Each structure stands twice: as C-alpha cells, then as structure tokens.
Length: 146
Figure 1 (tube, one colour):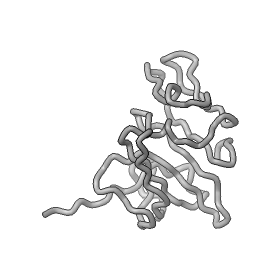
Figure 2 (cartoon, one colour):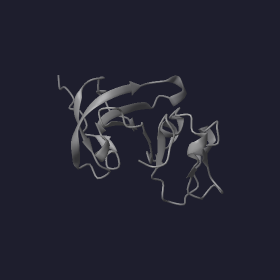
Figure 3 (cartoon, helix red, strand yellow):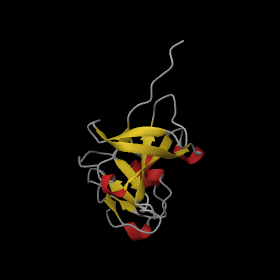
C-alpha cells in the first residue's frame, strides 16, 4: 500500500496535465495540492484525515481511497459508483481492475451517500490486501427488467 496513515491513504491515478482542481479545492487539510491548475495533484499523507471528499469530487474518477489492512488481511478500496441499482452492504460482488477485468471476489463494506459528496455515492469493497493495488471498481450489478 502507498504511504499513508492509520486512517488510510489516497491513491491518485490522475496522470494528465489538464486544467482541473476539484480534489485540491475540496481538501480542507491540504493533503492534496497542485502546483498549477494544469499540474498533476500531489498527495501529502501526513495531512490526510480520511474524509474521502477528494474521491467524490474527482470528475475523472481517478482518485481512490485505501483503508489499512485489517487483522484478516483485508483492505477497503473506495471508489465512486454512479449506477443503479446500488450495491448493499455485505453483498458479494466481483472486484475489477481499471480495464474492467475481474480481479477477485469482494464484499461490499460500505455504501456512503453523504451530503458533502454532492450526490456521488462512494462504495468500499473489502478485498484481499494483495489485490488492493489492482482493484478500481466492481462488476456492475444487473438491472431488473419489468
């Protein structure tokens, strides 16, 4: 896992130098900064409080939050989820990589819909620690047809 703190760490996969700064703007502690509007964001783990506002604010869905490994060797991976139906806590799903390829079975640890997230739902999957660096989403759930 990247350097972080006991609350977790932010994983920035923003690699394009484009005019964008919601992550730095929403971060109240200065844990994410940008030298210029076009520069890639920089994460300062010692300042992160684990609020996940940056994950919800990123329009490119290029920020993830990794919770620390628990006593069972599992890690929480948080990402924005913008589909219906929403998964349910405890639901067994398939975790996928950034290309949509299956990585491993996972369990939904949390589904957060805070007002501060501006209607973006954050889903946290519980995955084996060895897969935390690969998991970026989950296989989309089927929709019921009436």
